[in-house]
Amino acid sequence: MSTRIVHLSDLHFGSEIPGIVQALIEDINTDAPDLVVISGDLTLGARIGEFRAARAFIDTLAAPVLAVPGNHDISPYQLVQRFADPYRRWRAFISPDTEPVWRDRNIAVVGLNTAQRIAFHWNWARGRVSGNRLARLVRRLNDVPDGVTRIVVTHHPLLPPEDHATLPVVSGAAAALDALVRCEVRLVLAGHLHRGYARLAMPDGRGPLIVQGSTATSSRVRGEPNAYNIITISDHSGASIVARIWSGGRWVAREAALPRARTTQSGSGVVTAHSMPH
Image (cartoon, rainbow, N blue to C red; front, side):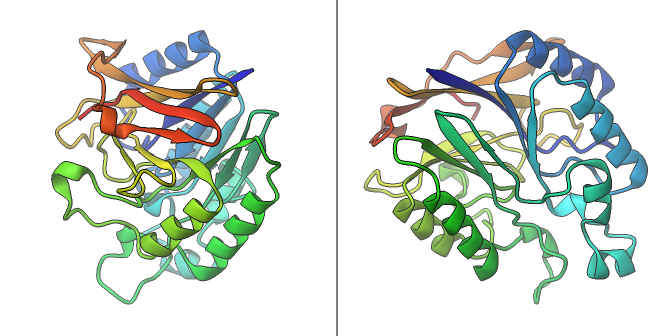
């Protein structure tokens, strides 16, 4: 048995490129995945029109969608709403839950909300893994039956790219990684940096493979083309990950493979990242 996931991130409706959006819808529906995961920042400024556009996009997808909010999905303009009820528009347009769960016989995908309404430093966009949210995540992961591949979805990265080690990660990342190792999580899907990469959580090969997504549909690219990931998880051969890159007006698979150092043996099989963008 295998499960196929499309991993999107940083759609940023409000700065979307319409032609890319339409081609992405067609690409995903043609691929017919079992689940579409969106790792945050569905909107640019949490405006109602942007949430409506994100909802319309989700409604065009044939597969079920699991989404977690990002820092851009909390309004920077409506400050009363930000502090009193930051996910009001998220609940109205996207989902009643900011930490959804999706399961089949092969995998369990669990959301972790890393967005924060306020922080005691200047960079509120950085995000945070709070103690309460981490404890709730651990309880949910511990409820997953043995033999089921555990996958966590966040918006903010738990590790920076290896070639830019000084890029900021989410506050509380170290504690979160320790917990994910103990819970035998195999994959973490995230975004925020608009860079696609994958790296192991621990230098000794323990823990999950951290899989980052670039921006799928926004003009706010940061030195990389628009891209998204296709992940296939098999109960026999583990997981394979391929990036789809926007190139020349169409979506294409990138052929260059990751180094062998990014392949790890896990209790659920071999996890191999085949074609992530750099």
